[in-house]
Image 1 (cartoon, helix red, strand yellow):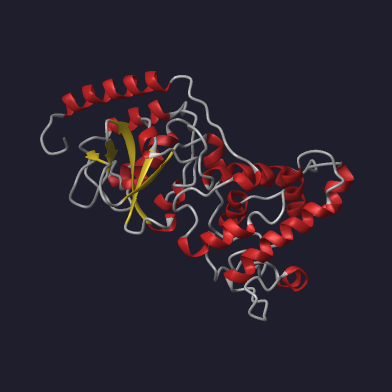
Image 2 (spheres, helix red, strand yellow):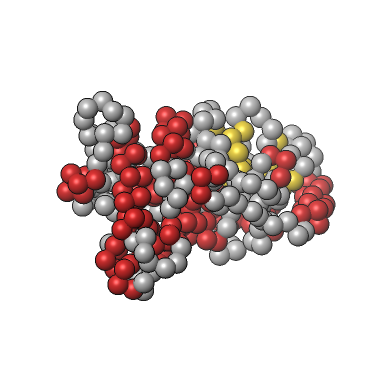
Length: 335
């Protein structure tokens, strides 16, 4: 299609795809699993940590693997060498004083190493479960109370009889529970997006625009884009702020399977299909196996097929999902 069909014909094709696919998708609702039944979405957790997160994410009823993954991603972005300005260290961003009291020997090798994910990930789960135990008598949702205790301390949760009325704490609880949805393997169909049509409308107007590495579409760049710059700009037009980097955009919502894709879904490509942090390209799905994307230097914004060997997966962008994504500077907040 990208090789010779005129833009006008492409746009007519796009309209038919969007209308037809949304008609077929009407009434779809999302559903999810809780507690120990939660599985991890393909590649969302880097392969070297997946078994640890899946195992330790079932340590107590207040957590699940996707929730533990959301916390670790939010704290360090899966960087085992991360250090924050508060001296929070490692993949789980423990402050040394907290580690001294709560770090465990997760791999049974005789030491407790704050820098070793095999100790730090089990310690993060153990710390969560200890907090859940500390606030077990507080009414309300056990997971929300645990997350609130993680952020504000158990005393505050006990004092207020639930999540305290602190803006930061309430934001943290919402962010982690929302972000967990991007790490969970969907059970049933993912709810359709209300903003996708507007994002597609913007992207289709960029067809034929020359590619620019690092391009955000600004006037000084001649209105040119790279792949993630295009998807970011498309969703900005409908009020959703995505991260600038493609592999962070992957966590902006839940992940529909290939046969459940709808127009507006972000589609991702990688040379490592086991690790979302290795994603190197993103496009905007339009239906019929095609996406609009800004491929590479020397090309233009165009239609391309998505069914290639490096297809990684997809994300259905949500407002809450995008808002839940952490800032990557500085790393973590520390516990």
